[in-house]
Length: 292
Image (cartoon, rainbow, N blue to C red; front, side, top):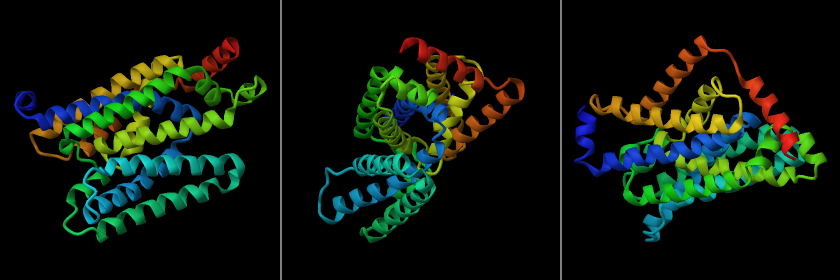
């Protein structure tokens, strides 16, 4: 009860709760596509590359007095560039995909650390993005997260059927004249924006866990794509809220606490339910062919 009592008194807790809820919306929607398309490893590469953009933005803000340049702006640019690069390589030379992902992963992290080291002063706040520090989210960051969330959800809503077809029945989508390559790149860009949303909540290292675990849990109880999305959003919101509550009194890091709770929930659900992934894929493949 100490958390809920403090929630009404401290704005930083309110911002943290809002950030978690906003990130959960994009996490549930885009995470469903990521799991369905089986591109978790690509999302991981994008997640680790954002440190380069954040480090560069912070370096320019401090050294060149560009105070308006927030690290999350750099994260958005770095994530989108990485997503497009990986996507183009994947489409044109799939055998080199793993190599490119590994290179972007390593170079992004290394460049970010170098930019942080080159920036005068102690960069504790920027390094906290590695494991996440949701309690440090500011009001301006909440607005930015809200804007990114709105863009991601709006695009997914408009292109729901096309993205679903690309994820579940790519061959049939090509036969019907759908630009699979374009929608695949769009999906990677949406994944990149969602990664930026989640970085503020659980950090760069733990992004993939929150992007996939709620969807994995939701997939045990649903049979269609939109059902999985809605339930994953609810489950992700529950994980982030419970994580904040549990970590408040003992002063634990909120990000790892959220992931630990999500992981335990996934293990428990997996032990007592069957795997519905195959049925979801079959159902969506049939729906895709019927709707198109």
